Amino acid sequence: MAVTHVRPDDRLHLQSIASLFGAASKIVTVTGAGISTKAGIPDFRSENGVYSLGHRRLFSSSVLSDPERRPLFYNGITKMRQVVNRASPTRTHRFILSLRDAGKLVRDYTQNIDCLEEKVGLSTDLRKGPGRKHVRGHHRVDYEPRLQERGVECILLHGSLRRLRCSNCFSTCCWDEDGREAKTLAGQEPPCPGCAEISEARTAAGKRATAIGTLRPDIVLYDEQDPWADLISAIARHDLLQRPDVLLIMGTSLATHGVKHLVKDFAKIIHKRAGKVVFVNLTEPARNWEGVIDYWVEWDCDAWVQDLTNRQPALCSGSIPRVLIDLTGNGEHVNTMASRGYDGGKGGSRDNPIDLTLS
Ligand SMILES: [Zn+2]
Picture 1 (tube, rainbow, N blue to C red):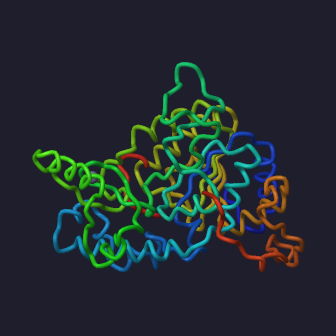
Picture 2 (picture 1 turned 30 degrees about the horizontal axis):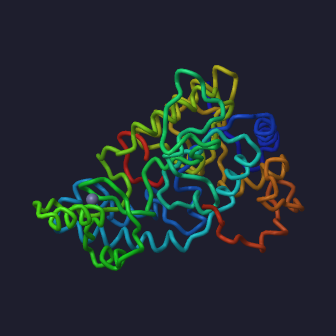
Picture 3 (picture 1 turned 90 degrees about the horizontal axis):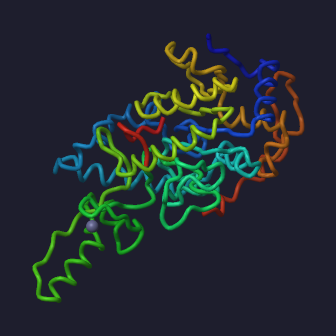
């Protein structure tokens, strides 16, 4: 079936989509860089994105074994993290939180590594597992420390810039402690404190010292296997069994292999239940998405979210200011409360093959 193209002035279809969200009880979201550009975080694939500046080579997995490019990578990724740390979640991030608060969110899957989902208050801790809700008999999986009611709410498909990971023991540690940020900014790889502790304990006991690994960002680079891939796959399978009724894709060109599969798997289940797949992006989906995507909303994500929550106020649960006046009569609204801003949130990998792409 052809994709229905919905423009900002297409009130009829926008209303149909809003009704869909009002009636839906199990919504899965898949997001990309387009939901974070308003937060000032660059899109990797857009015309003005990081790739266009010639940095694409820096994000292939080979960079870690290349003594010439590695310092540039560490320096660049640290600067990017500094931008990310200063950023605040957008209206779209808050909308996803609202879906959770309304009890409609099955899970949010994001390709972004900026952690704005955490800032808005969504849990990204995979160790929480899928949560108890809707868990069925033989598909139950044991997670440590214990299954929690909500489970992990947002899956970071490509990891995040929050922590560093040891290339030897795979444990993660805080990027902001022990001068690690200054080291990575200077293009250096900090040593792993976990490995160092083990080695020191051994030498103190008169045993042979062991290797101390180096730390790298806890993200998934091109051609890399995600260390959490099995756990993420298990959670995705769990979510497919929930039989969601809406898949909402926002701010992504769906270019990465792993995300393509994820979207197609969810779309198949959703269509069996006469549910819908809604794609909100400024760029048109490729022809091969016909039969997968039902609606293409050609609009900025934040603007569409504002329109949607205006049409379905119950969706916003008080976390998104309502637009009170429609001055233009064509779906463009004036937000009389926008100047209140946002306090940055008080809240609080991945698929295969996966890259660092934010889009
Ligand atoms: Zn280590």
